[in-house]
Every structure is written in structure tokens, then in C-alpha cells.
Image (cartoon, rainbow over all chains, first blue to last red; front, side, top):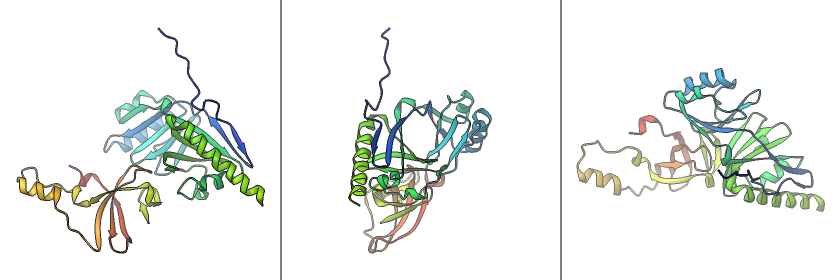
Length: 181
Length: 88
């Protein structure tokens, strides 16, 4: 059996600091997509609460309990982050491990929202610490999570290099504009 | 142009893609004759005014929407989720 070595999706591209903004990699732990079967939304909600704590999130919301985060992820979908999903959830819908499918980057600092304003067609000033938006960053589909002190951006792992490049470019542009006064 | 997604709120047009007339969501009956199926598939009114269309929120929540749009002014008059009642 070949002994495979896990590689870093960012390949040394992060962290990036420019002006007041900082972009760094985050390890979100296990990630699983939850998609309840038709008419099983309430059963999935109850099973999720019993097994991990958070309920099935309403559109645009994040439910947190201990290490477990249930993140709204689209119509009829949530992403369970931080814990390995309990087998009991499988009775009520699709449960799919996507841990290696996504990368997470945290953008913090005073200029963070100015940076994303150049890339994302949504006003993120309204995004509170328990909020999430599914939107686009450049041409990439992403999820942007509000956290205290910044945002976390989820993108496809295969697009990690593009994500780091797009955001780092915008960070330098915002920092350059600030330096000009 | 902005579309007020029932799940995501008002979003920019670039997040959506359009399929066309919402008649596509209402199929002929299972036993319908070939002519009926052919008309449903190919014949469209070239409406100048209000039209119900199917839009896909590709860059957002991945929901199919019925958008009532004025093809002359581009004003959006109503948006709703495609529901189970619209599917087969």
C-alpha cells in the first residue's frame, strides 16, 4: 500500500498581509453536506439537534453548538462543519463527506469588507456573525460566513490558488489606494 | 437588473441564468399526442410585456425561480420558488 501524504491546498500562498487586511488559511475540520429528503426537513432538524446540537439552519443563517457548525448552503442544503456526521442523519436525507472538496480562508482587518466589495456582488456590511451568503467571488461560486472580526470564505479546493490570487490582488489595491490618501 | 431571490434577497443579474418561458415547468399530460408535445417544446409567444420565465440562481442558493419580468422595460414584477407542485 502506498503511503499517501496530505498536501496543503494553498501551497504556501497564505497568509497574505496588505495594509489593514490579512488573509489566512483556516482548518474547518470535517465538512459534510446535508440535504434532507422531501418532507424530511423537520426529522433532519430533530436528528441534527439530538446528535450534534445545532438545528438545521434557516436560509442565510449559521447554527453553532460547541465544535459543530450547521451552515445554510443553498435551497434544501446545509453544510455540517467541525464534527463527523452521526450515522443517524442518513435516515433523513443525503449526507456526503466533502471535507477534501472545500478550502476555507479567513479575511480580517479594517479593510476586509472594502477588499470584498471589489470582488463580490453582495453588500457584506449587512452580514452579521451568524450569517452566511452563497454568492460569487469573481467567477467562482463561494460561501461567505460572518464571524466576529471578519469573514470566512469557502471555495472549491481546486480553485484555492485563484481565490488567494484574486483576494491578494484586491487587498494590495485597497492598501495602495489607502496609502495615496 | 436585480432579482429578489426569496431565499437570498436582492441579487445582481450575474448570479442568475435564464432558461426561458415558465411554460417549460408545466408539461403536457402523459398521454398527450405528438403534436401537443411538439408545440410545448418548440412554440413560444414572442411576448412584448409581462412574461413568466424560469431563472436559475446558479451563483447563489441553486434554486429554480419563476420570475415575472417585463420584456420591454426589464422591470421585475414578482419572484417565486419553483415548488414541488411544478415538478412531475
